[in-house]
Amino acid sequence: MFGPLSFKHGNLTSLKGKRISQPISVVHGEVLAVLEGVKLLAEKNFSNVLVETDYLLAVQAVTATQEDLGYVGICATDIRERLKNLAISEFSHVYRSANHPKYKPHLIPVYELDAPATLGKFSSISAEFIILAQLACAMVNLSKSRLPPYLPILLLLLLLASAHNSQAKTKNAVKTKVYLSPKIELEPGMVSNKNYLAIDFPQGHVAIKSFDAELVDQDGKSVPLYQLYLHHWILIKYYQPTLNASLPPIFGNISGVCSGNFLIQYFGSGSETRKTLSHVPDPYGIVSGNPSDAPAGYEEKWLLNVHAIDTRGVVDKVGCLECTCDLYNMTRDENGLPLPPDYYGGLSCCLDGSRCRLKGGHQGGNRTYYLKYTVRYLDWDTSIVPVRVFVLDVTDIVTKANSSQGIVYRHDCQVEYQVKSCSNTSLLDKNCCTDTKSVSFTLPKGGNLVYGVGHLHVGGESIALYGQGGRDICKSTTKYGTGHKAGNEAGYVVGMSTCYPKRGSVKISDGETLTLVSKYNSARRHAGVMGLFNILLADS
Image (cartoon, rainbow, N blue to C red):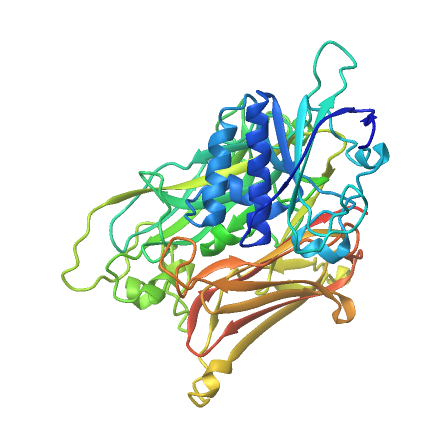
């Protein structure tokens, strides 16, 4: 059909086409395509396999930590089990620069396969065997006649890498490690808000590609939010002394913006953690383990803070997860000082070891939980572009610099705030009540936006970042659950939308004035809400 196909990385050894029968969705079709490819590998007794797809949702389905009994989940489970039998197998996402912008929302590839030059697009390939499973919606077929965009076709390319020397070369593939936090033991109504130092984490100089987490029970099963509410988890880098243990640790602060050691997490999420993407797209990565970053006499470690509330048997689940002070019988903060009269709920009222009010006569035993976290990473190399991490806060009180008065530019982030009810409106209008809070500030050093995501609590609608003149930078909206299973709990925030702009398409200029706007539904009062926005920037 083609004649010999070869290029600098190797020769085409196998080509197989197969129609995918009646997929229920794009991601289902792509996962089915990957499954067929894995079956083919097993038939040919291949090992040392790298499986790649540029459909990110397919990667997330196969690498998901929670059980999914739907069509996609069943196929993904089958793939995982088959990969266990392939020695040194990896499954990862890869960015394809040839993807047509029309299909960017789904990352569906468009390729012509009629010349070795096309295969040259895969310039980073150097694994022994590579299988590329592509769902060919809007793909040019072998005779170069365009297929209907709804016709799923499986195209498998098995490439045998060239052996320039006697030792096989290995691609810098994404690695995955899954860990458990120390156990979290709770009784009904109890709160755990602890810092876990020197947690298990990938070693060496690496690029973090994603950090995903969820609460599980002692059997490893996902715990629903209406049983154990995940207020938040955050991941913080710090440096631990190696020579003099009496010295304090040094926090590895992110690029901004809050002053002091406030909101310095590299990753963080809350109830939305299961359905919020944390993936750092290629060619970017978050630096970890660079020896030159550690101060002399110190070594890099990671801290995990987990704030969870056991809401079994409580009188008011929403009130408890919002840390309403009267439900916790709290009148003073963690330092013993009286709480302000207008502070009716928040972090100061659901401290570690506190208990939310239970229904009369409720009895429940102690239960053990864990935060299960999955880290995906690459060994660092010169092709990876480092990103800078920023956490923006809508409660930020900005103090502008005044050199003549000795005033420095400061960001006093308050972290949380209260949303008052629109009690003066009619019952009908309450469904349209929206509380809007905003703050404007400047970033001394900008860059290209790589990723953006917000963090809001129950009642939250959206949080958006705007540039100078009101131009759109990124908007993140809440997704609420509609069912009963973990990950889709009705009435809870179970996901936040993310921004992945085309490389170099969204730029924040040095010194540009930015505006952050957070919106909550105010049909009822909300206590201790947050309006945080995480962004990753890369130098132009």
